[in-house]
Length: 174
Image (tube, rainbow, N blue to C red; front, side):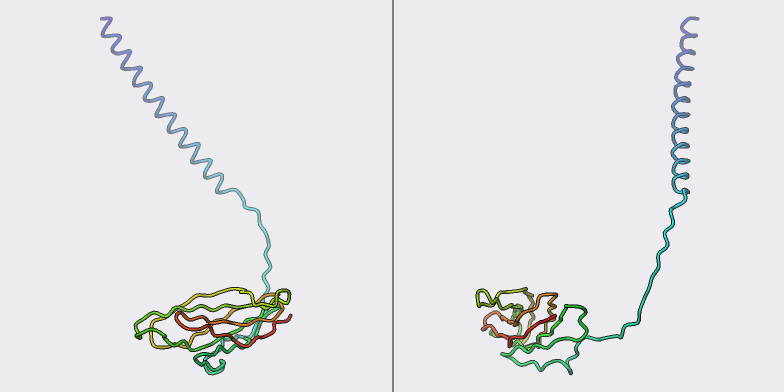
């Protein structure tokens, strides 16, 4: 009889332990869910935001008809209207002719905006843009912006396999 009683006691203890673990899991889930619900229902601080607007005229980029004429071996530069403050945007155009043996060859070129240094009496690269195309020739353009840096500038176009073409110098002032 002692073994039978101990078997029932062990079996009952195991069931009690399982029920206790299940109760703990349920309680933990309930507390976690109610804490989540309380956190998401907390009132959020309000802040009033006032938006203002003003009408601005719609300006379009320079079209091919009003742009400076593009010619092979020459870089033409003109200022785009509408710069705010001391930001000046320019458009540079040229025609790049494929110097390679065939029209399927890719032509790589780069634009450089150079700034004149009065201290060294030389042109220094201000920034560069790289591009390319495949074909016989293409009219290419670039729109660099100069912000709060008055001085003399020029734009240089270097085509792979050809000589560098330089624009006339131009002055930027605020």
